[in-house]
Image (cartoon, rainbow, N blue to C red):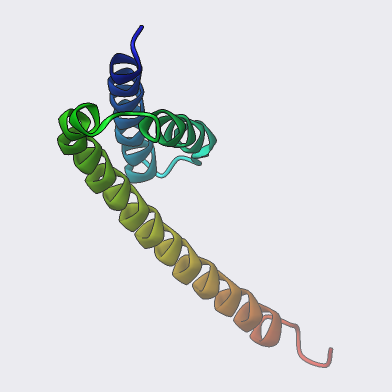
Length: 106
């Protein structure tokens, strides 16, 4: 497989992985982006060896992948913020129960 073909395969695979991760985040599942990170590292290594014409043909799809990864990051940040707020509320309720839920004289 040629370098440009391999790069396009990696781009498509990374795009599918980013889409899968976004769906998992929306469904409230735990996600690990290790595979996506490895795919992007492999893409970076391949892209550095392309001549300008080959790189130009891959650029639009790479920009699309970048947009997909940006959306994933935004959704992960939003999910993290929601979880943090939920945890803070649970902590506050726990403190209230401990403070006001004790029997008199204790």
